[in-house]
Length: 140
Image (tube, rainbow, N blue to C red; front, side, top):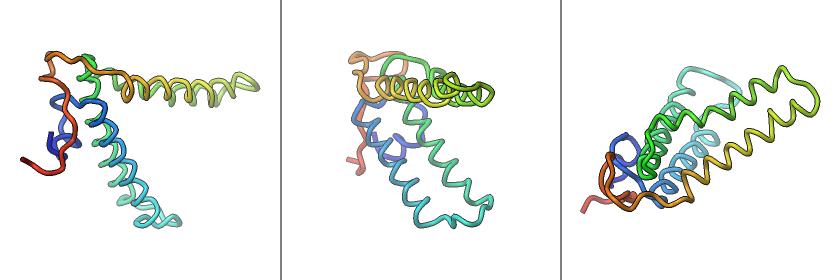
């Protein structure tokens, strides 16, 4: 799969290698933007553009990876569970605040990363397309 389809299209499937390449591209992009482009003392609307672009791209990569695991793209909503846990922890106290605010988001995030990046995809064709592909940088 050519890189721009892998990063910006919600159709098709990505294998584990394609997922990690897409994840790394988004991470590097955000690292460069955060360290070299954005002014940390001022906030403006243009600061949200790179974040929105990366969020869109990462969503496409994750959904295609879910398709490779023969799951619906709607399962990406599980990624919001750590945020929900953190939000609930704000009203808790003591050990429960630590558990809900730190441990549960870390546990859920680790499980999601295992699901998306470690477990093998379905080797047969499924309703989302043929066997999962990796990212290609040059069209051949």
